[in-house]
Length: 588
Image 1 (cartoon, helix red, strand yellow):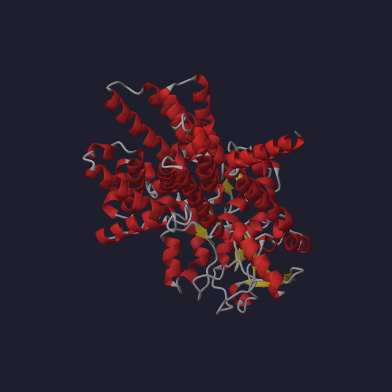
Image 2: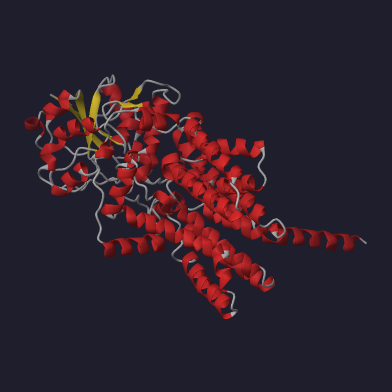
């Protein structure tokens, strides 16, 4: 009897493991990722581009100045920018930075992004396949998981991860609207972002409402109401952005941004490239596994419809719709760089001047994994062996994401660099989070020079480093600020821009990075311990800097022509691990 009970217990465990096996890789990865960042802490390697040089510094500035909820105040960079230009406080991602230290908030954002994607994808899949949910459950969780760990633009990770949630809410509202669903849709912008995803989401819902109204031969009132509710949610959650766009009369750098003008052939190549590879802000890593499977299935599936003399099913297949959606987004991306098309849009909708309406491509990672899911559930339906083959495919897709060294794969680089250092006994040249911001070093500098909020400039380092450490900067990085300030700042860097044509074009035709430029090199700002500068002279107009209130210059390079430029060396400071040496100059 005892033996039978033990055998029965083993069978129960076996059945439980068979039923919920997918939870182990998901929970295991999240624990491993959290454990790695907990163990290394701020000695972790975090992506710099459009991340540590931008949003993390902005969140830290809001924390330093206690400005998350304030109105009518400026934050101390770019000579003083309205707090309204920075991320809204009515955002789940912003709330993390209000509550936790910046590094901790960043890591929590990575973990919660994966959880949000899993929950969102589960809700959507269960709504679309209620009868087969239990059968498809492993695949549903694993697809949501792989989508959630994609190394996309970190500051908008929640916006990417929550796309299935938006689809779920809108489908439910169309099918059976309730007050609760409308409330959830109104709150959805808390995990989204209007100018990257929200505007396009609203546009797609409007198109869907029109199409369904025609198909059903009656107005799709639930969806029409959903558009209004969602739009209102965005206005409330991002009221600062809407006030700037609709009520502000200040001319911004958007008016002087010059976009690429491609020929017809180049536009076609760009459409194909972005469909095939995506872009680094929305890195789906789909080229290696997902794309070949989906393309192969596309041809097999549609050829079978033709062979079976059922061509009408081609237009009713969900998989084909998703693939068409992918192509449509890629076409919009390419057309943005077609001058006549872009100018037509800007003429019809003047507020979109200088604004990238090709961000429809940000929907593509979600669509690629939706397409993969649709392929795999059809393999699931073929039998038990095919089911485990589908499970194997999704596991390979997950490993592909984890092991691909994309720009924002912080876990990969932290593990790689720390492993390299352990076995080679020497540190890599890249700066980790702690070394990059060098808080202890800058606290020592501020104490030594008795810093009291004087305006400063950075040379050879990102202004974000100064901003993170509570130092006010005339320079900075922001995609939306006054055109007049861009022109005023240009007077400071004019001597450098005159010497390097590429830098002149970069600043004059874009200008989001108002930096001090080299008069010789294209860039001397790198997140590395070593500095590679072929010229130790600085080319700047100190009088123009003084006119904007500039008093200090922080440089990673000891300047050879400081005196003749109008700078006086105040002192040099080196971090304890010698990853940084900062030279502080006074603008005379």
